Length: 234
Image (cartoon, rainbow, N blue to C red; front, top):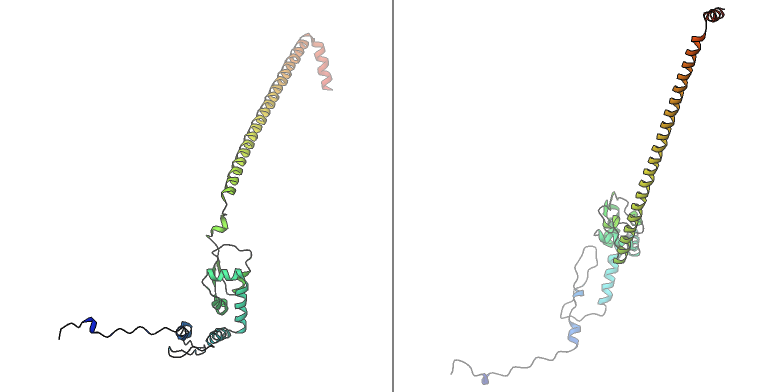
């Protein structure tokens, strides 16, 4: 008897059993295994030996409906408001709030961040009655506007034209101011010259009058002076 068995002496390997199409249908799906959450209906766990019941999908929908029924009437209204308001949904999503969290805890939220800056309206913030802080600072959409290449080119050309226009206006204003200053200086010089001429004429007339009086006093006799003094006494 040899140590290693001859391969011809081994029994033939049986072929695998044929795979029926109903085997895949009998395989349990992952949806049939659910957690037992407190407050939620107990879902039955199907084994691999049992056949899948045709009511499994209906049970799943009933479970979802029952989880929605755990919310109160006001919370369900908030859920509906969340689904019908795009701005509110965007605000909650950017702040990490789901629809159920918004429905249950919207009255406890005290601070929010508006990552997208100002929206068409701020009405979405009114659904948080305890809100104390709404952060909208350091948002690029507040003080910056994204422009296309064409709009940037138009804006730069407009800015250059405006600079050229205002530079020309500034030069024109400076030129007008300097011309007015020169005109005022000319008028002042003319006035000073006229004043000096008038004063010189008055001085000349005064000297002529004084000389005339001196000449007249020399021709007056003593008798005439005595008569004048007597008249002044009376």
